[in-house]
Image (tube, rainbow, N blue to C red; front, side, top):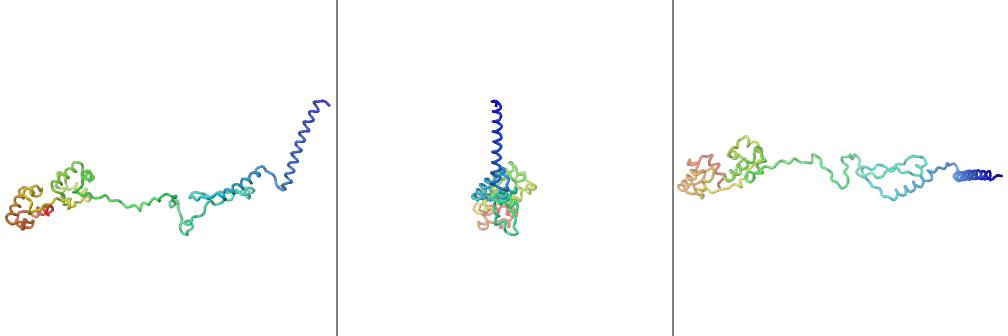
Length: 257
């Protein structure tokens, strides 16, 4: 036999022997597991499912609002190709109460406060401004009052000794009733801040400095007091004896003890 033919036969014999060995191995596995067709995927799916089952059994489950039931692959699902859904959390006690259901608006994540509803808020009414203590920054918040009128009100208040009623603002230069009505409900006067004097002991100069009295009425009051006596020097007697008019007496009375 020639050398080339011999080498050719050796190669063919080796290939035939390899095919025979593979057929024997396949027959051996088929006889080992009868009735089952061996697949490569089956060798790994069983091991993976066993490991996942052990992991889920030892790991604590977390309960969140947005969690959905997870699907766990088991040995049965590996053969059937179907998923076995396993719930990841237990139903909360509140959800199990009959007649009570939770909507997405009622669910609040832990650690946060529920935002109060609109009806929980009460309207905050703007506070009124006290005329005898308010400064210009507060007065300019009133309707129709700018920096000019705010300064004019404060200057007139100092000369007058304080306001007894809001209507006295009409005595401020440039103030009209329409402007006053625009903010009348937002102001008030606390008479405890008024500067007062005693009609029986005040001097003529002290009486004359008051805007409601002046020099002429101050001189008349002092002469009446000297003539009638201290006990008779009252507003009632001054009106009775025609020294003062009733309207003048009412305004002056706000600034007397």
